[in-house]
Image 1 (spheres, rainbow, N blue to C red):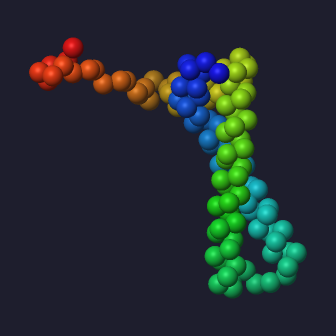
Image 2 (spheres, rainbow, N blue to C red; image 1 turned 90 degrees about the vertical axis):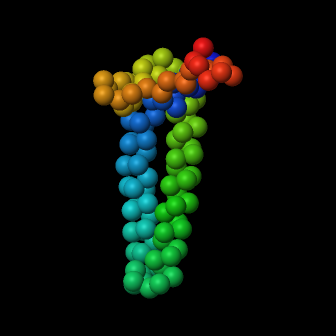
Length: 111
């Protein structure tokens, strides 16, 4: 993958991150409901509160890692790259892009 694509992929991940959050919340909710219905226990027990949090974090990491790998692979396809690029917050006029600091000489003056 060319270097410019990987830099733009990092810059343009805002729209995709929002989509990932909706997907992760939906999967975690369905998984927790399925477990509660399958094992038929009260969700107020202390061990369930702890284990459901750990399970939610593990599912979040697994889904986010998988989706980011897929997204960065698909960034090589022009229509997908266009979609990701224009769902970014960096396309909005008030969002500032990162600018590299100017190099300074040993005297402390830019140059």
